[in-house]
Length: 249
Image (cartoon, rainbow, N blue to C red; front, side, top):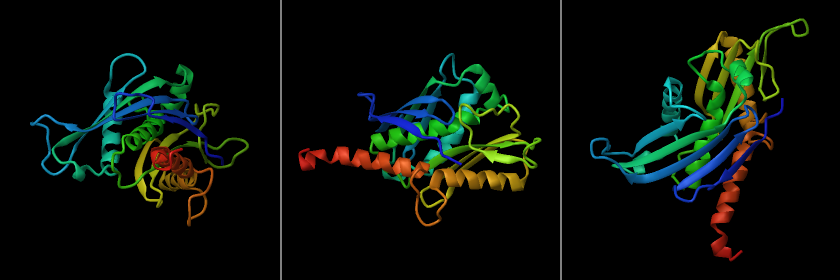
């Protein structure tokens, strides 16, 4: 099962401390992310022992809705475990994500099993935020990779339900559930969100496929072609670019 290739651009914006454009070829979303911080925080909001983390998601059109609020809450709980907020007490780290483009209406309906949730866009949002944090040189405890999986029911050809890694060409109109998993390079499960109908066995299979997509088949090291390998290449390119002044290249 192949992992969809991701494309990205670091520091497309000049004024924020860090920014990124992330194109998810798995779901068809394009996200523009910016990070400012650590910056001054209003006195009533400051925390004495760590930085305040703010997440703002702006939809492709219209005003923010409860869907964006729900996604912001999921991202806040995930990124708080990654950012070293204790290094910047009484300050603010602000992450803003703009949905630039998304799948056409028909595709969104296929991903949207629950009208209140949009799990399909969550991997693209998290990857864009992580890239923007790296661009801003915000200290992190670890990095992560995120994968979306779907459970497709049995049919005449397949005797039992199967787990797939969706792409924009995958028909998810009959999928019974969607799952989003985030893994660190050490294969630690950082995030697990699901919607739809499934049992524990199918959840475990979905988690296993997501782990393979994020970290590869091997339990020893990250394999080429896995999302963690793609992210490692992004970090390597950024470090090499930041160190050019030392080598004069």
